[in-house]
Image 1 (tube, rainbow, N blue to C red):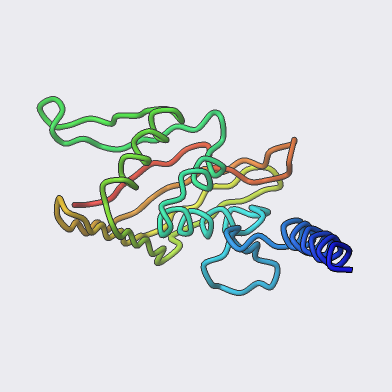
Image 2: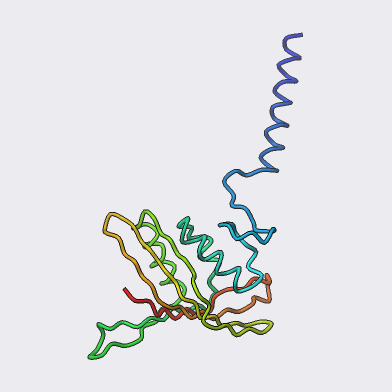
Length: 175
């Protein structure tokens, strides 16, 4: 009788564990299906949802979420006042941006990003452009940095998975 009880107990435990492993992952972020404004992942069904996921990626320093925000043709553009006699615009592609953002995530303990005002937005069915003001605060061992400014984002709707992604980010922030 003791052997049968142990066998049934092991079987029950195995079924119980398999059931919960397949149904619940405590480490997976929630997907926003309620329209709530909290820090949850969205399905990127609009440029606004992409920007919500952008905040999520920066807040939780999640490079996988961040990578999914960027289109394969992504370009980051910023003005470097230290180049040339009066400065110039510099750009890089998706691969360099992912490496740079990964280093940013590793070097700061706390990152807060707040989108403030939408200056303008232009949208159609497959592309969009948003100009947003922002506040970015970086706190870490190498110091605390507060940036504010403007970012212009271009978005495109992927025909493959119907997700919006960023194709271009022109940073107009001030240190």
